[in-house]
Length: 505
Image (cartoon, one colour):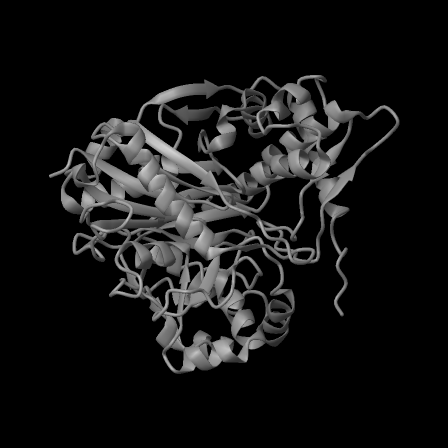
């Protein structure tokens, strides 16, 4: 058996390949950004061929940097931006259309019609999800409704649907030459047409959305010892390696944080921000605007469920300040700029660029910067940008406490923004709980590597994975209660100002 496991981390803004050793340490990695394609306000697309080519580049790049050969990898896992979806030709391997990204709000009218006919929660009992532009099912419907030739191909069995995990696995295992067309329970559960109780596609919802079942991938566990195929020797890995781990990025971070017991939670600060709470083998219904989702499934075992709070703009807001406002040249500079003041000057930034996700679910909302006076400057704006992520997390934690009936006592964190000490301290202050960063903060990729390694016996069980986890840093709350609640009240007022911006036509 190989000495390492590898993980493709196909994210919203970039793709990485990371190699881990048996202790869960990073041995080497490579990363490459891809374009964000904005065709219209609220629309976001990716070029699937660019993403696949970048995947090949980072796999080869990591192997070259480390001097490790593909044959030294025991297994390969995939983790991916969820809900981003595409349709492609299985004979040529060419996409019919750009991938429509999870942040994209073009399906607003489709979702409004679905809500009119049966309410926002019409599918929640089966899927755990509200009707929202976030999920991939309406995005597939949008493509089929707007391009009759793609619908015709789908009806003839000449089109494949898939999220980015499906696309990457299909290409890694051969593409047009017998590539495997699969997805796992965590990604399938974000389409809005998988029944989370039976873990299968739901024919009734597929009929309502008018999506042909023939184009859908096979649903599998997240860690599957049968594997979905092996990488090709003539591919980027340069060897036959089992592909046997697959989780949507947020569930992968839950797995990588080893949150295997009910009540354990993690928050990932990436392009968006995602808080997941393990609820065990029981799917807990949310009455406070959260999502009920599949956390993970190991082959032969019952699925583990989670409550999730999702917000669309966290790191992406910092990227917007860099690219669209030009206030900073690199993302880490936001912390230094924010340290130019010790408060937000009563300025709040709510990044509802494509509507508000949890716990509001308002696609009519749009972003605002409020509370501006002649006193406000770029330092206040930078601080408001960082505080936005912490306040959005507070919204989700409050909802989660109400749904679970148990108050969160600590928060495990991961993702790129955990290196921002100002944000992490403010997060602890505004939640009034300790915030804990593990030694390996790349837990999204680590979760996929764990799932793959577990499947082939590289790790013997969940206890092996737990033993790898250790603390890097802890932030403790120091804020006065009155200051905390005054700040949060200002945030709630700012959120109100985002609503009803987009009018129904």
